[in-house]
Amino acid sequence: MKATGVIRKIDGLGRIVIPMEIRNKLDISENDPLEIHVEGSNISIKKYEPDCTFCGSSKNVVEYKNKIVCEKCLQELKKM
Image (cartoon, rainbow, N blue to C red; front, side):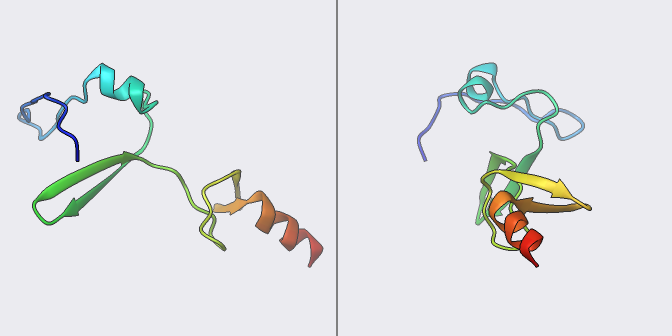
């Protein structure tokens, strides 16, 4: 992982601020959902991209009856 040279402190409520330069580079906007993972002693944060319930693809997904479905699987379901 490449170091960015940016250091932030955690506030009293456990929050940190992701610098604007990093948010812009990763296309992260206000209220975007983020995934947080723990890997050993590291914390990983990435922009959340929902996956298709059936095939796991994150491309061209839509929500249907509270499920995330990609266009390909949606077409297959229509054929049934």
